[in-house]
Structure formats: structure tokens, C-alpha cells
Length: 179
Image 1 (cartoon, rainbow, N blue to C red):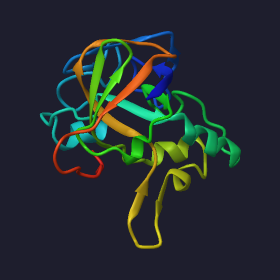
Image 2: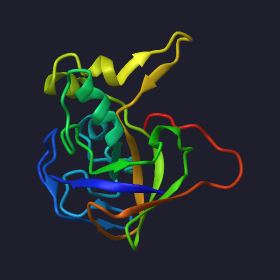
Image 3: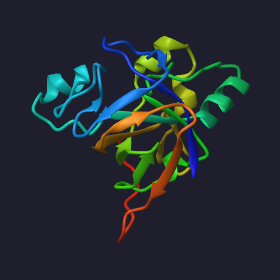
């Protein structure tokens, strides 16, 4: 069981998203009023590649523990500043398998689709930050730590302080990959 620390959204294509008192998640679409809401891709680079591709990035979740670590390391970051819609605490987001369902608050349910692939916008936001959230491990694997992406299965209002319940998928657990 985890907790929602903050919720954020922006109707404009901005890297950072202002925090709000609440967000409404809409089934099949994402965060109501957010620029990335929709059934097909909304991220500009993905729209250029294939505007008909499904939007597997409707809701971006990031763990507040990453904010804590980055701040302690001299890179202060707060909720919404790295573009996330939901900031969590107490859930190992990066360790979840694909298909995990997260109940956010009383009603909303999102399904985890994969990892956020950190991009140069993170470096533009704060020089040196990209290498703290994207690096290559000793074994050669790429480590992405900038949160996870999900789609909305059941809509509902999400607020700071709401509980997060984790429901792991049945069967073989597939590790998260960038989406």
C-alpha cells in the first residue's frame, strides 16, 4: 500500500506540470484537461512517428523517493517538475511488472504499460539531471528511473493523501520496458 503525494496536470505542452488539489482520470483517455490526454499518442515526437499509435502514456507516475534522492544529491526536484501526473510514495514503481493495476483513491484504476524513457528535456530543465535518471549499469543494461507510464482503466478523482493499492498481474511477470 502506498500513498499519492501530489497530482499534476497541464493543458499545454509544458515539461513541468503544476500541482493541483485533484485530477480527474478518464477511462481510456488519461488526465482530464492534460495535453497528453487521448486514445492516440500525444507526445510530439511520437505523433511525428505515428499519430495513430495507441496512447500508452496517458498517466505518468513517479515515486517521491526519487525526488528525495535527487534533492539530497544536489538536484532539487519536486512534484510535477519532471512532468509526472501522479507523485507516489511507498510503492516500488520501477519494480512493478507490466500489466500491474494500481487503484488510486476510491475509484480510479490505471494499468502500468512501461517505463518513461528520459529525454533531453530533463537535461534542459536542470543540467546534469539526465545522467542521474538515465545511465548504463556495469552489466551494460540501460537503467531508466524517471517513472512509469499507464493507461486509465477506470476513471475517478485522485487527490494527495489517497491510498494506492497494487494488484499484480497473474501469470508470468514481464519486466517494464520503455513505452
